Length: 264
Ligand code: TA6
Image (cartoon, rainbow, N blue to C red; front, side):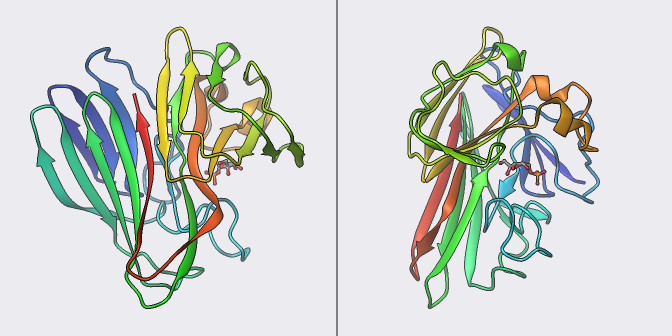
């Protein structure tokens, strides 16, 4: 599948046109990879890529109908670059998927991915209602971050209740300190913006915008073993923290919405 590479004075990035999927981001101030890509990721376009930043849209998670793909329609299709701007310390890339509507979402919409590649990476997924009627959509920037050792990582900035999809319960308060020691799949219904992955070797700062939820996911050992595109110990080096719209957002005709994650 075609890969786009950006290498400017301050950062480098790789992106697959399949899925409009960012695969790597490395700021040159520390030459440290921020994203995790599974060594067993399938890169031939036959399934979504495991790792990097999958784009989930126009729904998050399982679809309302069993025969529709999880996480929407666009991580499974080709995207095209519609604009590139190079500035001194920043490259701006805009991409759009070949199609925005399909089974499960038959509305007139325009979807644009805008990447600002500089000292930090800004990822914006912009939904525009180009039709005459309102529609409701969801989605996520399903980012996989590289960590040195999942057992030693802490997340800061997440407080309050969350839906625990592993235990199938609603929890009143987030753990403090927030560590990951087992399979984790949580939807935090929060508009908190600033989250840190505290890691002695692989710290990452996130600023999120336009979300109604932040999702924390690590499949851990047993679940990974049943996933063909996860390596045996891959779960130890990754942590997903996703800016997501899980509750459905209504967009009126002519309106736009930006779901954004800034990674530093
Ligand atoms: O965002 C968490 C989640 O929805 C999990 O439930 C988990 O299954 C994961 O995404 C990965 O989904 P995928 O379809 O890429 O295997």
